[in-house]
Image 1 (cartoon, rainbow, N blue to C red):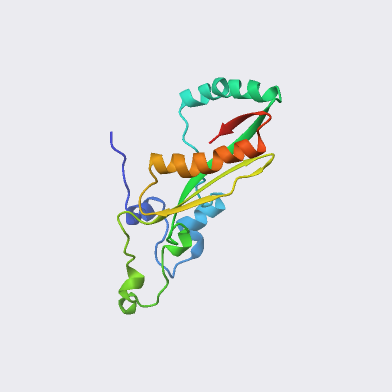
Image 2 (image 1 turned 90 degrees about the horizontal axis):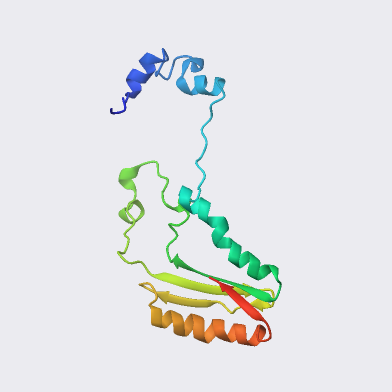
Length: 174
């Protein structure tokens, strides 16, 4: 069975409210919602886990917990992130303000985007002994396996582990 959709006009009729600007403000839908204690809320982001993933999380984390519980291991955490070189990742930079859209230049109205925009890869690791020197790579496509192993793992991470963690066992989380 499909959902019944109401137009704004029919919604005003069904709630016995006014849609005209000059009429009393206490009769608008927004005022009625406020009077009932219903306010607009911005949605919050939440991770999407399935029920199976939620059930498996404690059992998957248990071996790591037991390993670190003995305190004979050092934990090294590493992560990488791709950043685009545009300012559109900030939601306030996606629009523009104007009083007359017909006089607005086209380069302001329309943002041309590349099919594969240039990105910067940032790779870093941290432990209780120190912070790995960050790795930056500017590329138009994602970094390949060979470059990642050579530049990120061999030249940086292994040297970091060997210089700061040579006497103890290490667990690397990436």
